[in-house]
Every structure is written in structure tokens, then in C-alpha cells.
Image 1 (cartoon, rainbow, N blue to C red):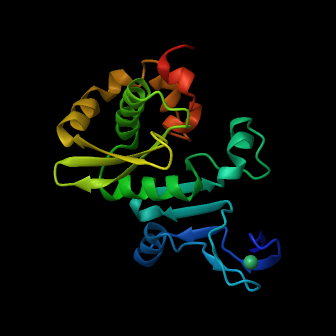
Image 2: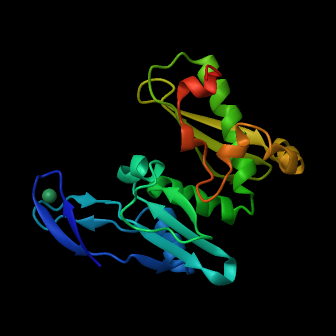
Length: 209
Ligand SMILES: [Zn+2]
């Protein structure tokens, strides 16, 4: 599909990008390495990573993910996307969340339990740091018996790396059935977009709402 990309150099160009890809090992590597959808500006040579809606699927592995571009986040929340997301697809917003979702699948984890862990980590971070920045958190992989998360926005331009014992995650998995009925998790974990970013708001996490 032909897409128009506008570069930082203010010039634009057309690039042919798929609106659907099969998640084979090569594609998975390209997404995880960050080279998926990257393209070079023919005018200035800058490497760009534009975001366009794309479906990533592998029926044999039960994977059917739709990536909404970050710039469409609010339109998605308002239910007024100009393109449709079919039932049964899971939604991620932006390349970063697409990579995260693939890492969750690769680590054989349950996205819902991972999001609950993230919720508590972010809540704690908000209490510990009176940050002016907008905080966000992302799962970056499993290392032996630890889950690793990156928190952005703690201090200006600083990245926080947090390790959580796999045991803690497993305890949440065991309680998952009851947890999904509790608020805020009922809303947070409702498909198709299972993400703490759904209502990212410091005020909400601080418990003011
Ligand atoms: Zn350029």
C-alpha cells in the first residue's frame, strides 16, 4: 500500500508498506529489532520509522494483532478510527507496544497479568517520584526468573529499569480470574486493547478519581 511519509527535512515521499504481514521468524526479528516499516528519506537520507495501521498475524500461533499508529490513539479511544478492527484481533498502539506484545508472547506470558504488574509498578513509581513528566512503562523481556520493565519519565531523560520476580507474576496469574472482575482491572484488561496505557493518567493511578 502506497503511503505518504513526511520527513523531518519537511519534504515528503511515497513508500510502499504492507497493511498486513505474516508473522514468520524473519518478520518477528525485523519487528523486534526495530527495522520493520523503517524507510530512508530519498531527499536527505535520514532513516525514518513511520507508523501506519498494520495487521500482524500468524493463525497457527493464534496471533492476530492490529497496530494502531500512536498518532491515532485518541481517535481510537473515541471509537472513530477511519479503518476497522475486526473482532478477535488484539490491539496495540505504536511500534513500542507491538514489540512489547511480541515479547510477552515469546516469553509465554499472559498479557493481562503483565499489565497488572505494570499497573502496580507505575503506581509505586508515581508515589516515589513526584515527576512532572508523563510516566510510561513497558515490558522488555524475561531474564531467567525475572521480568524486566522500563519506566520512562521518572526524571528528565532518565530511564528506570525494574526487575520483578517471576513468582510475583505467577501469583497474579493464579488470581487472574478474580482480578479481572475487580476495578480498575475490569476496564484495563477488556479486549481488544489490553493495556495500562488505556487510561494513562497520573491522577487516576494516584487514586484521585
Ligand atoms: Zn528527509
